[in-house]
Image 1 (spheres, helix red, strand yellow):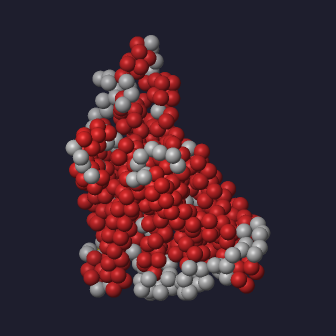
Image 2 (cartoon, chains in turn red, blue):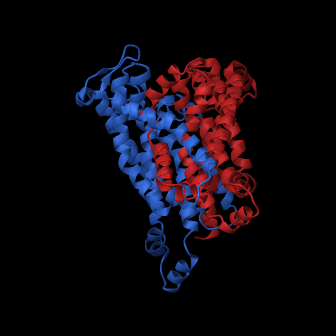
Image 3 (tube, chains in turn yellow, blue):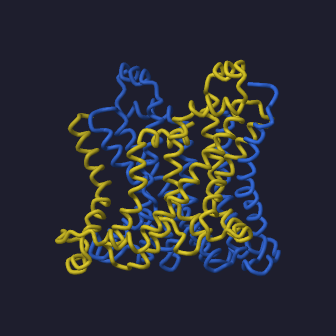
Length: 269
Length: 275
């Protein structure tokens, strides 16, 4: 394919792909009156950040904070627990290690629907229904299998010599994990952290299963509520979607290489 | 590898395993049991055997949901696989500007499906692209929801295929060029056979993602109008948390599990072989 044809084809597709985003960005900075008078499809005749202000002050700020409170501990706990499990399962002859790895992965592949009713009742039983703690523990439990599987594959590929040398020097298994294996696992941890961040930040299903009050809703479910609250205020709804997308876009741009390799590792390995 | 296992390592495995057991395996077992009961969530569940499954046969919404899930599997899965592969082949060669194109196609993948559906709802409003919203018409609602879902999924599948294409030995293409192969022949005789393992991964990802699809439908239509865009996943959710028929909802979840079962096992067998 010649260069010119290639750029024409790829360029057209890319522009088409980005068009919805551009349209929403434009809608987000128009005024309500402009949209009401001239319609959504007309060229913008106004510029205002009022839509962003409305979305942010009417629940957006609180929801963003809730998302931080859920996402940061969930990512941290998930990776801490799964890297410990992956270390033991990949570097030592734990009896039944293959079965354990596959069992854990199998749990992550289950359709979440089978868990929704029991999990919601379980959180009620424990008295944590409608709290962020419920959302954190549920998502940690559900994600562990996948992270463990990816990390143990990565740790298995490390050379044995380093561990042996450290053992001869008198380092215990925990020291080896902390000082040698974890630092060497950093690329995989970064990839998984970027992936996990977007998954958890973008989650809707678990949130609406274990949460009810609008005061505890993270950004993604809160966006749905915003839609109900601002029916046909398209500038506010568009601004809300932009705000909700910013954190994951920032993580993606910052960790692009890790992010893509994480997706590929998870699936192609 | 050491022979004697230090006890602290057992903790390293047991703690995560217990967490997953408590929040995944134990609830899953309960789910299968609840599918055999009638339960409103308040009074104790009443055992009814296979009644819930028998009820599905006469439930027109269930039939719509199954049909729509099948349509979703074929269109969402099929089109994202074909589109993702096509774009990966187009953007596989490292050349100037290719990173920008890849990023453009990938950007929607990082949006939540809720944000994605709001973006498209803005576009779908009367006076936007269409005179009346395709989401409001039972004949078009399912397809109107499918477009945003595809918009987001294609970039993801493209990344999987790009990784697969990268792994193909360039020598194979050189040999094919020496033999005078056309671009199409190179695709069918080199690329496609070499992508076998990626294809099976993409197939599992697609089936699992299709059956899990919930957010985009729930945010755009809640399965309506008149259940016309209902999927098994949305029907399960509304049956459980809006109609509070927890037993019947659990049985619907078991149906989703059964549909996903074959793919899950295939995926695990692959994982087992590579371990």
